[in-house]
Length: 368
Image 1: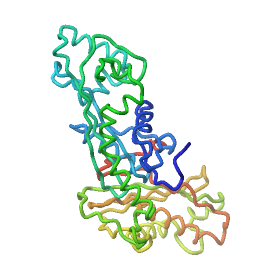
Image 2 (image 1 turned 180 degrees about the vertical axis):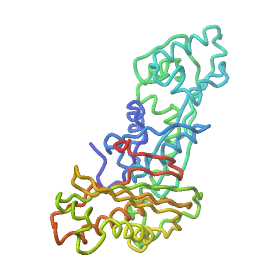
Image 3 (image 1 turned 45 degrees about the vertical axis):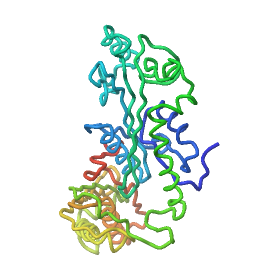
Image 4 (image 1 turned 90 degrees about the horizontal axis):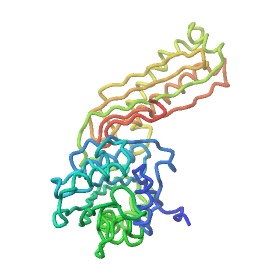
């Protein structure tokens, strides 16, 4: 049975089917409706450029949250083998090559330990979880599962390095344990146990309001970004106005009675971006450092294609400013041309790129 629809939604920031199964089990009853990227229609594979598990988990959590507008939970984990000086560690997923099958990774790792005696085959799985809110806040926890490395793969359950990790008191590997048994002792299980009290508390707060711009008393509020770092922020939005070919010809030929449509719409888009905080409730007023609105006639539409690029250096992003610039530019075109074409249609207004902030650089997959 699915989670109750009134529960807040938590996006699991992973494309790994094995992790999804494990996280759904570990977080059962957490008070959140768990959603996968595929279920959310999100195609995203954030680059793991951190120097710790926590940094990588934070990069992924913020990227998935920024792409979806949802709370997001991501993890990063690795197998640390004492005889290999902690390797593969942070690079466990990319050990012997990112595209190398796990069966081959396991074979290579066992070969590296071929001369290592049983008493020196100590190892551990380590996992860091990072939970991210849509307003940029985040929380982190860690879990560690101590064990040893077997001489050969054993078991048909689990995934990754489970077949060679002896983590049960009776000498079984992670792949020989049932999901229920593993969910009591694994590194992710320990991290999840540390996270569950926080998830329950935050679910209660979210249910009390349902919105990040409304407090627990039902009063409107602006999200507090004072603790966030100032970074260079860029957002690019696009949209189009579909029209008759005759209307597009009038625009390009200066035949619209109200004046120069493209120049007027361009100015309107720039002015609108600067006043977004006056148009959208609870938007932060920002000192914008750059606004570029481009309008391009497209005979194939026929349409006018609109692209807005907005820049700032600050504590919050400029996606709303870019969207507002595109929307108002499109509405201006409609207003100036409606006398000759009331069938015009404004469509496909969306953010296509964002840069800066904790989530880093994101280009939506259909724009690549």
